[in-house]
Image (cartoon, rainbow, N blue to C red; front, side, top):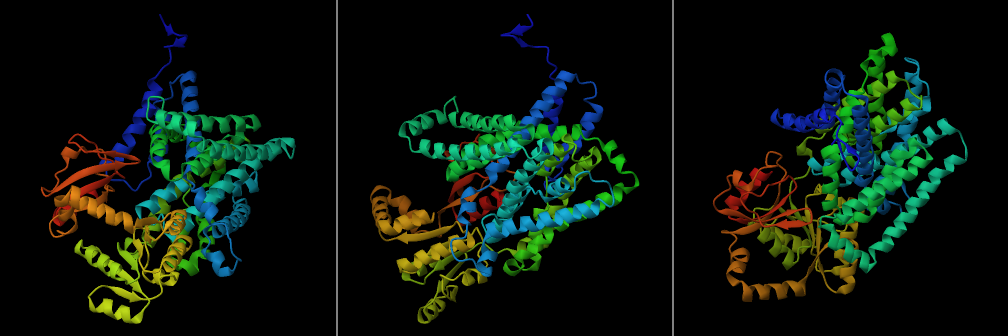
Length: 631
C-alpha cells in the first residue's frame, strides 16, 4: 500500500536531507574553526552554490519545486521577523512633541533616520546614473532602490554584542536601519506594481492593505482586554495546542494571502506588516514567543532560503557584463558604502567623526532586503540576470566587511566601563555607594550641593559636582546602556526630572527610583522605571528577620562571606553544555536559571543557553570564577 489518507510516499527526501544537513553542519563547522565573526548566511549561500552544482543536478522536478516552496516560506519568514525586530514603541516615542529646533532635530533618532534615508536615496539615484555609464542598467530608479536597502538583522546582533543596543548611538543606528527597511519595502513594492500594471486602480489596494493593518491593530487591542480571551490564551499557551504560536502563523498567512491577491510582488510587504503588527502587541512579553519563531524560522525555513539562493546563483550571468565586470563590481561596492557613510555625517556633532562614520559603515551591511529587491526586479525584468548576480555578491561582501570596519573604528575601549551612577548624595545614596563598593562595584555619585560634595569626597567615595537633571553630566560620564542609574536625590520632583531626561534623551533602560505615593508610582510606571517602595522594603525586611533570619543576615550583613548575583551567559562556548560538564568553583552554586519568561531549578543534566540569566550564590572569589566562565 503506497498511500495513507491519500498521502504519497513516493517523494524523494534525499535533496531535502542534503539541504538540512548542510544547514546543520555550517554553524557547527564555523564554531569548531572559530570563524564566529563570519555571518552564517554568507557561508550558506556559498555552500548552496556548490551543492546545486555537484549534488542537486539529478534531483527530480518535484523535489526542486518542494525546495523552492520551502525557500519561499523561509523568505516570507525572514521578512516577517524583520518586521518583528522593529521596536514600534521607540518609533512612536521619537515623534517630535516640542517646537523643532536644529539641536532637537539632531537628537531625534526618527527624524535623523528619515533624513539619512532621503539623503541615501538621492545619492543612490545619482550613483546609479554614474554606474549606468559602465554597464547598461535597464531601470535607474529601481536599481537605486536596491542600493538604499540595509539589514536590521546584521545591525542588531553587532550592537547587542557591543552593549550599545540601548544607548543613544545604538538607537540612532537601529531606527535609521528600521526606517530604511520600512520605506525600502514600500517603495520597491510600489515601483514593482507600477512597472507591472501602471498607475491603475490596483495601486489603491496597497492602501487597503495598510487599512487592514490598522483594523487588525484595533481588533488586537480590543482582544487584549477581553477577559475570556486572556483566560483561554493563557490556558492554551503552554499546552500541546501552542495557541500563541498558531495564532502568529495565522497572522503571517492572513497578510501574505491578502497581499497575494494584490500581486506576487506585494507578498513580502504583507509578511513585513504581519511582523510589524505582532511587534506592537508583544512589547516586553515577546521573548518566549520570539524564541519559538526564531527556532522555526532560523532553525529550518530561513537556512533553506539562503542555501537555495546559492543553488540558483548563476555566475555565468556575470559574463553579460564582459570586460566591464570587475570595474563595475568595484565601483558598485564603493557606491554601496558611500551612500550610507556620507549621510552618517549627520551624527558627527553628537558622537564625533570616528563613531559617526562607523555607524555609516554598519548601516551599509545588506542581506535579506537587497536579495528580495533584486529577486523581484529580476522576475519583473527591471534588472538583468548579471546585475542580480552582482547584487548577491554585494550582499556577501557588505556583510563581511561592514562589521569588521565597524569594530575597527569603534574598539571596545571607546565604550564606557561598567558602573552604577547615583544621582543625589543623600544618606541613602552614600550608604548604597558603600554597600556596592563592598561588592567591588564601580560607583559614582552626582551631587549638586558644593558642601555635600566636599563631605562625600572626604569619605573616599567617587563623586562629581553637577546637576543630575542635565544630559551633559551623563555625557561626561559616558553613560553606557549597561550602567544602572539610581535617582536618589531626596526630592521626588527632581528624581522624576532625572528619569524623564534619561528616557527621552538617552533611551536608557536601567533606571531605579524610590516611590513616595501612588501618583509618583504611576509616573514611574509610565516611564518604565524600576520602582522601590520604601514601605514594602521595610515590611519585607521584617518578614525576612522573622521567617529566615540566618539567610537574611548572611546576605545583608556578611558581605565578605556570601552574596547573590545575576550573571548573563554571553560565552558561546557554554551554549549547549550541561551544567555537570562545567567545573564550577566549590564555594558557589546556581540557585535559579531564567530563560525568557520561564524559571528553572537547575540540575546536573540541565542544558545552558546563551542569554540565560543565572542566579548565583557564593563567595566573591566563586562569583568571579563563574562570571569569567559565563562571559
